[in-house]
Length: 244
Length: 244
Image 1: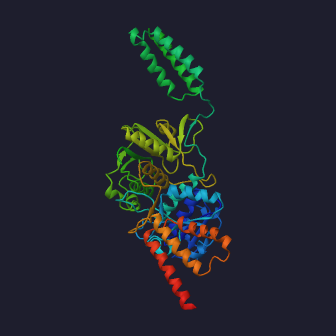
Image 2: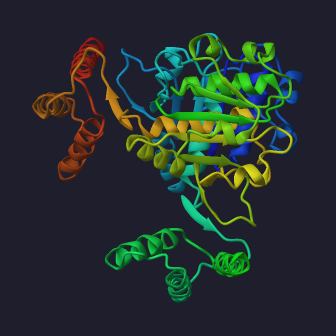
Image 3: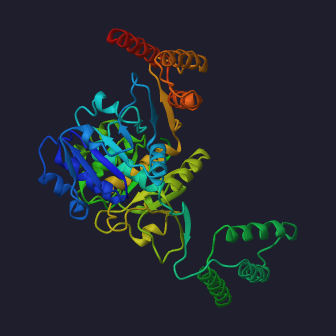
């Protein structure tokens, strides 16, 4: 994804840098910037936690200071707790990601900024970011680790530019069934039920037919499945005949 | 969160069970069900990866078979790859979570089902689920581990019932500034700029004033910040006077 960067400031554990790299690549973000990693760089533990992400991504960029790491960004979002003493917009990850993709599409470069494990981001760094991302969590168990925070933000950024339909009926080789095939099926089923004296009370018959039709109409049947249901009727008719 | 369960089927690594427990508790889900864990239960590695989640959550329920694990659920969602040969609705995590919370609010119990690390879910188990959740990822680097998949789904479920405003302007002790205070500020600033012969070309003055007013209007200033800006004007006037 162009012009979207993940920026880790003073990260401590290589494992978390590797998990962050894997998470961002899972969602198509490849610009990783690392400011002042405690254990230096490259880092073996990062590589082993990255599930091969570093072999696919461009080399991470290393910076000594935060200001240089965001120098080419137009908008930066600091992932941090809600601050009481700094007047800034606080956004959910969803809202920040939507905003970021809108800005990216109008030509901006966006940086998502994450602090180190122990102390998070310094106020001096947060103040240089345009807005704050706060991830709403269970207040009684709220701690997310660095890799998890990057995963959630990267997922939201991917979603904001993704066109996957929210709900889709997969049918494999088959096709959705046109209504006429359902009507044929109902006629046959209801005819056989009549023969089998299913509708004992004539005045209840319309309601029972409505209920049966509703079961199979609501079901999003495909052509193959209607054939299967016809086969089931045939088999049951056969059973009854054999049984009598 | 009531009536929402996370169901891990044939999980292999205790670490991933622990990460799943942490992730679900982060987002307020506490009903964990484990079907046939490879390394038995309890599991030390699970405990150590859970960041204390097992001390807060009710004890996970263990099952030998999948059917028993979902017996009390009304709707189950299987997290898996897109299947070509089974006719079922495939949903994004966001859509499935929204659907789940709507169902939960009308009294259903919902299970989110995750397969083991090596082979995922069996078709025999998937077929018993009402729908499929597929997490759209980078097709060239799509593998999410079990803990990550649970984290993303739990996050979406939390969001679907969360009322956090998408964007909120935090101001600490201060208050948003009413327009009248901006008008006072503009009058003072523009008066001082006049004195300082800032508006050299009289015909450009209206445009310049518009631009200046726009900078400070767009900015969502609070009362404290307007005071700070007045102080800056005072200081700069002082400097100029001193400097001349």
